[in-house]
Each structure stands twice: as structure tokens, then as C-alpha cells.
Image 1 (tube, rainbow, N blue to C red):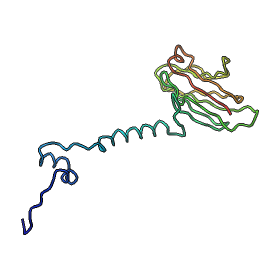
Image 2 (cartoon, rainbow, N blue to C red):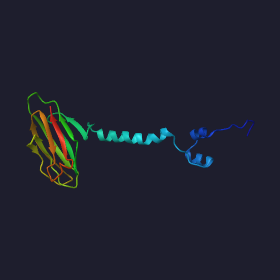
Image 3 (cartoon, helix red, strand yellow):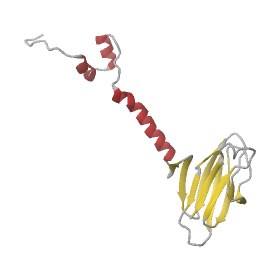
Image 4 (tube, rainbow, N blue to C red):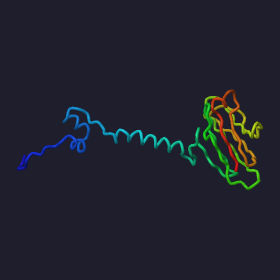
Length: 169
């Protein structure tokens, strides 16, 4: 030492100033993160997951993502084995009392065959045929304002979760 008095350094100061690998050599044990650091990783993970799920103009609704599309536009619905994404579609901005044209594209990303049928009550108003995975099929519909549901009618797929809501305003 050159002309100065030795200064006592506590462990907390070392924790802030040195990397963890040096700390373990000095104090003989690994540095453990404080509560803020322990919660930071999971918090970032949850934020990223929420952003990924609600991306592409959709928002989370109970049971899945929801999207809004203007009349005359197409909406893509992804079918996987026993789920649709988005689960809720709102076609908004049609003329009062008029019918709205919409194209629905079903992209089957599942391993099984799927279809998408649109119903008003118990009456089928349109849909796609059943087809194998890694393919896309479309249907064009002219709908009056109201509430509809869409389902996969292949086997028990609807009972296993392949359902959604379609609303025209």
C-alpha cells in the first residue's frame, strides 16, 4: 500500500462491484440474486408471451385471440389440432341494414383434416370443405349483421375446442 490506510469493504459493496465469478472466489460461494433479480426473468417472459399472443392486431379475449376486420377484407383463421386462432372475429363498418362480404381463409396447420363451417343458429351459411394439414382453403360469404359461430365439423373436433365466434356489425 502506498501511504493510505486500509479500508474495510463489506460484502454488499463487493456484490455490486464485481462479477459473480470473482465474488465466488473471494467469498467462497456463488452470488445469489436479490428478490428484484429473481422476479425480473419471469416478468420479462410473461410480457413477451403476452405481446406474442396479442400481436398482429388482435387482443386477448377469454378463450383466445380476437381480431377486427373491415368489410370486404379477408380474415385468416389458423386451424391446429383442436383449436382455431383467432377464436373471435368481428367484421365492423358495414352499411346499416346491408349485407357484408367477407372472405375467410382457413390455414390448416394441424396433422389432421379440418374444415370451417359458419352457422347462424343451427343453419349453416357457408364454409370450407375438409382438407389435410399444410394447406389453405377459402370461402366467401355475404352476411347480414348478427352473431354467428364457426366450427370444425370433422369428427369430434368441435367438442374438443375447434369453435369460435363471428360477429358482423
